[in-house]
Image 1: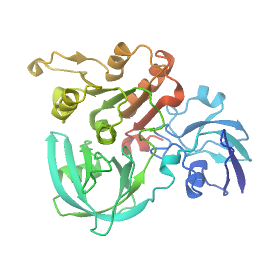
Image 2: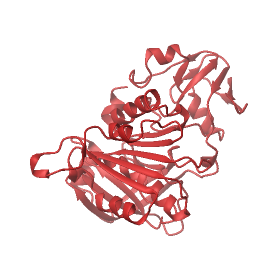
Image 3: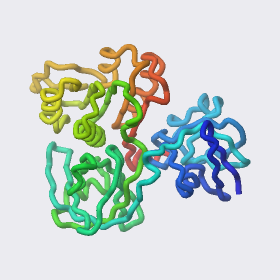
Image 4: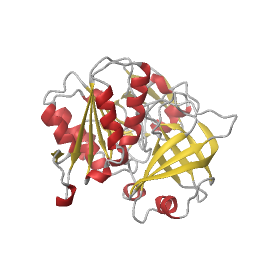
Length: 341
C-alpha cells in the first residue's frame, strides 16, 4: 500500500499494489482530471513532485521523454513504486455526481451527415442521469468492450440523452450503429464520466475549439451557459474537412444571431470546388490563433480528434500565452488509437 499526497490541496489517499493512481483516487472520491483512462488522450497528465512510478503502457506522443524528464506522468497508467507527492488539482464539481450503470433504449436515430448519426436514448422511467454539461457515457458491450460518447444535450434538457456518433470505417461498434442498429434497441451504459465541463468559478472569456463530432460536448456546454444566463464572451471555432462535416451549422449560426456575446467561426480544411466555400480554411485551431494571438486572459475548451487537441494545447500555451491550467480538453480516441498504446 502506497500513500499519495496531492498538492496544493494536501489531500491524501491510498493506492493498492498494482493499482494506477487515477483508479485509486476515483475509488476514494478524489476526482482528478481524466478522459480515456487508457494512456491515449493525455487529460490525466500531471507532475510527480517526489517519489517513483511505473509509467505503465501509453502512447509516446501522449507522454514524451522530454515530459517524463520534467517529472510528468499519466495518472491513469502510473503505478506508485513508493509514496508519492503529486501536483494535481481535484475537480470538485464532479465529486458528488453518482456514476450509474443503466439500460437505455434507442428512442430515435437521425442521420445528419454521411458519417454522423445522432442517437437519442431513453432511460428507464424511474431513473434520471445527473451530469455536468460536457461529460460522457460509455456503452457496455456484450464482449466486455466499452465505447465512449459525449452527451450533447445540456443537463436541464435531459428527457432524452443525445449522442453524436461518427462512423469510423471498420469500427465494430459504429459499423453496427450505421448498419444494423434500429430504434427501440436496448443497450447498457455507464455514466456520467469525465472532467470536461465548464469551470463556472471563472469569469474569463472562452474560446471553444471543436473538430467533427467534438462539437457534441461543446454544444452541451454552450446550451447550458445560455440556459443559466452566463454572460462570459464566447467564440466557437468548429472545423471539418468539408462543409457537410459541420452537421449542425445552422444551429451554431442561430446561436450567433440570437446571442450578442457569442461568435461562431466555421473552418474548413479541404474544401472542394463544388463546395463553393468562401469562409475560413486550414486548421481550426490556427484560425483561433489568428483571431486570439494573446490568450493569457482566456479559458480554452477543445474537443475532437487527438491530433487537433494536442496541437491546440501545444500552440495555445507556447505561442498565445494561454496558462496551461486554463486548457480543458476531451480527446476523442478511437479503438485504433487505444490499440496503438
